[in-house]
Image 1 (tube, rainbow, N blue to C red):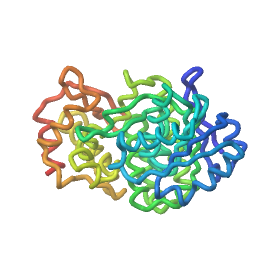
Image 2: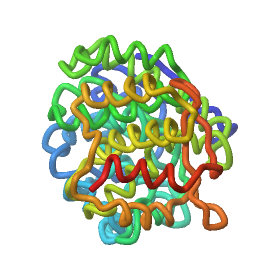
Image 3: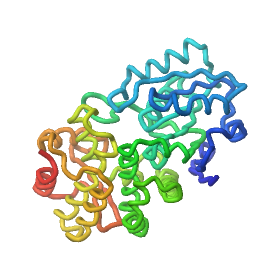
Image 4: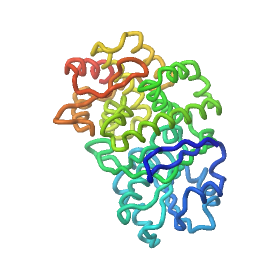
Length: 358
């Protein structure tokens, strides 16, 4: 087991990474002190791992609730279902909510924990690659709205993240590819050597090589933990973690959160961010092609045929990074060097959207 740490003073917490951690009762006893626990999972993950987690949490009082699977179910209605279970079981302020699943489960369980009795403890047990490398770390919680992605939510840090990499063996290939989009993002924003490593090892990752996957989980969490430790509430550096997301979230919203997995939309968004960087004279055509080629080799889309550029642009205008009516974008000065800016030419954005959408 490897242990990383998100340094946030007395709200800091460990990220525990290793094989077979779901079965480590002592681990959960050490890092999750509450006696009353609500486990939130979904209909795909619960049959695989819920019984193992419950065994590790006993003899404490454990209640489980199982939600539908998929981004389209990341709604206030399903958060209300979680809250109803907490109330019905008379859970107090000293309880804890445990998220067992991917990013959708983690976001909703975390939001319920943030709002129940004005905040209770929360632990992340991510079972997808995307959740292990990204969404389980950093305390962003919330739900989607028909008007846009993640528009309703709160910052609520977990007390621990327990990433059992053995769960990645049961991931469908499509989910594995989707998770790799967020991994590619880390190389692009601040680690050119990691991006080059991914170019060399992408086939091993797609084949489910355990050592390669463990490496990308650890390195991705290292990068995110450092950034969150510097900027918990996205007032500065943390916005870099949204590389490709302003584009990708617009794709998800425009298609009703049903056509594309989050990571698939982000894959297309990374290529659009690289294209926009090239259109703005920031990176060479060769760097744009490296980004496009790696996303394509990963099996992620580089073009989205069912979204009109004007629709995407309207959705981008309600992105959370918009300031004074201006869309701020995360762009690249080079592979491994990202920055946030609102200083770009509108025609460059129009050309970028036209090249990858519609």
